[in-house]
Length: 300
Image (cartoon, rainbow, N blue to C red):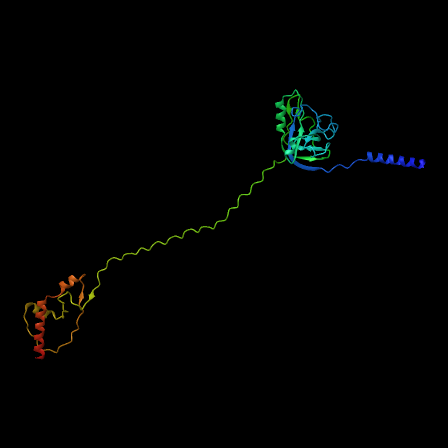
């Protein structure tokens, strides 16, 4: 039995060695967009280079930004496993999760870059550099090798200068998220108010020019109380004799029926008609003459 167990134990040890040396499959690369800030040596509490997970890549905050020497990166505890590589294009460097960030839990995605510096550096200069690199950008989780890299710390203590990506660099800031526009309240459609119909212009009654009163045919007495009898037209010679008062009988002749012409009163009012009527004494004389004329023709 002991002889049989020895070969089995040796085979198990060999198998474990093969598994330990076998390459592990890398996690898939994931592109995200988040809020990225920077922290300095003066921001640590206490100030210095101490990190939450020493021994991951470094014992204290540091790194040059290459794939094999990524720069220390902080995140909300539990968001990313220590040792997770992240590539941030707008600063052209690789980073690794080695520290925690208490404030990063205030956003869905927030990571904090170590920008370097020394305790002897002006705190205002390092803070200004961190502010210059802050914004909302894209970043890659578990990036592959071969990304564009500008190695070195983000803040250069020798010159107190901050790294600024050059124009045309492949590292372009991710578009800033715009607040979603609030939908404008839907206006209740109002019924179109019909334009008031133009009022038809009132047809002004054109007052016809006054026309002279038409001739009136009348058989009534011209005036009251004395009625004006209708005059019987007679030959002009007879009218002349009547005016002189001579009642000369005409020679006997066959009487002809004389059509009575209608009496027209062209005067505009009754007063003129009354003035046109013959006086009562003239009528009496004419009647007397007509009676004598009849007696002379037909006899009594």
